[in-house]
Image 1 (spheres, rainbow, N blue to C red):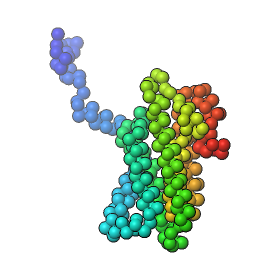
Image 2 (cartoon, one colour; image 1 turned 120 degrees about the vertical axis):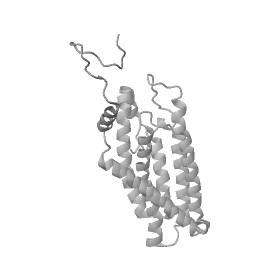
Image 3 (tube, rainbow, N blue to C red; image 1 turned 135 degrees about the vertical axis):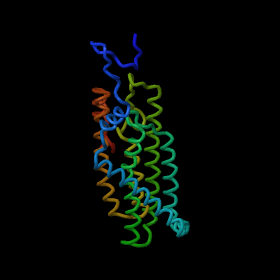
Image 4 (tube, rainbow, N blue to C red; image 1 turned 180 degrees about the horizontal axis):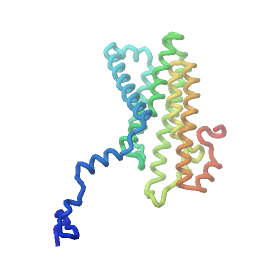
Length: 255
């Protein structure tokens, strides 16, 4: 019996040459057959990467100019940012990565999602500084800080509840969470995140940015919820249809 890597004989006894394709050709074909990322998607990722880098540069410049003096004068801003840093760090600890998305795609998606939030963080202080001047009324700033804490409690608490109530689930036996915050609204994490972002516009007392944040936030939330609910309906079927009829999406008794 001829060895596997030896050339196979023809019917007339002559060798036909190796039947195994060239390895370099296989690699080239595989690379060529891989789907290339869409141009708009690639452009969005590059823009997100550039934007984050520029924000980091601006932050470094701000530190060099003595931003501590600014925080000493604007204590509500410092309190908001300190609480927000704790919120994001805690969220990273308790969140679950998407099971059906590669890590690189999941990271890219998160970067793109953060761009509207970065614009809100830039627009509110810009509006207050160059349009009105001074600081927002104390009651408005205090309410903004309270709203941020409420949003963090809702968003982080919902993520913790989601992990707790789905403990032990398997692909064959998924769990639809309908307890805790999910008993009242279907997307408490989105609701909490939106409250945290909207609170930033109150910290600076920026009404135009607040209105734009409401409009853009509603559009983005509708888009994200539509995608999520389509996936949930495909997974749970009639059980999720019943859940949708019994609850509101984002705001109890309103939306």
